[in-house]
Length: 240
Image (cartoon, rainbow, N blue to C red):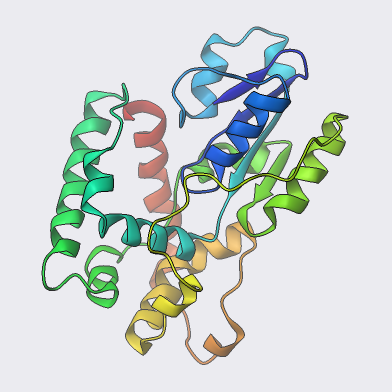
């Protein structure tokens, strides 16, 4: 998380949404400083923030979750990247669950069955969400990964700051070639993607490719989404 008392902003960093690149720009050119853990939630900041800091302009970034899943998959293909992970001081529950979840998926992808279709159908069954559902909708501004340069420029205008330069790329996914949609071509994968990502897409304004129009989202994902998210919010705000 990044804060600037001089420029009165707080940047909440959702993983895999260009948050590292934005972080570097804020630290180097816009009087930002790092606080708490990199990917802490906004509610944790509020516990220690002064009354004045609570009034700061708050922004974050989001990214098409289909692209996030593709990025996770490519990272799992890289054994050396997994070994170089930097430990962070998360709660015991977060460390245990995160370690188990990452290792099980890494072992699966590294195995002979680890093609994307098999991986996706194995690990993505429930309606997708990340912790953007906790606070993002009440933030002052959201940068979309897909329009990062334009949205960052607009952000600076709202903050009344002159832009120094375009945002350089940082922490790019290794071995990611072409569009993430290249992984979502199998009919079974497309149907699962419609079910898994549909509710989140509606919540954050994303759209499926036009050529997927013939695939209909199932009835249960939209109905199950609120219940899943109630449990997720409890985990992210109380146990994470």
